Image (cartoon, rainbow, N blue to C red; front, side, top):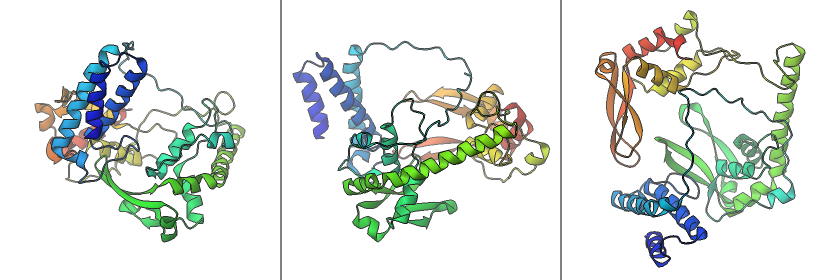
Length: 359
């Protein structure tokens, strides 16, 4: 609770933000306390473990109260940001593709801040990519580049996880080098992953050029594929551009393979199952679950509501319940119950009948 006392005491002592620098300090404090109130480490963006003090209900409510108090005091000093009116559906921005090899110079790597606070491997990768010059077009580093090099060094071992997905976890040698096995509930799923203390972060920096070599192998492969497409007349527009994808659609033969069962599923699972029906080489856009939600709303089967904390949620109408949409009470990671909206066989059948209207 020291951070709460410090923030409140500091604000009173200084008259609540008379100087821009003080305003910035209090804004940062409000952000940190807000994240702690929902059980998230503000430094690593990772979910705090069960049993952590900040995840106790009374402490969580106290933190949320202090964050709201600070926000009320800070808000009058913030300049209002102009609100852009968004169209109901904005056109998609073209995806940016890498145009240059990845390069980490000693000067760039010198800006990496090694922290005593352990960081996940994916967090290390994000921090490294954040150091690259904006607009450089460089091929970014990805998690698998680092994992592959660490596996070759005997730092990581692959272990089978849920649904057959491999996990990269520290070997005994890796643990000696500062790599640690960690577990957390992230977005409702139990995850097992690797975290890196200061020594482990330094080891990754020592091996970074090996990781860069893997990233640039991937870049060369993509360039070769683009060149082959151009030579075959498959590329569209200027050199290096990709052909425009078709809107999402499925044939009757593909729809016949949709897995049906009696168990209600969330809308994200419906979208995943439909996307899995596309051929691997199909030049077709993937379906987003929001498109399915929007369709149900347009049919009057779902309606949008605002919950107690101001978040927009979708809930079945009477017609929606009749069409096979159900709700199921669940417990969230904050310990509070909520109604999960699920779609039974009848509701899924409706989606299949109108699937080519969703894209």
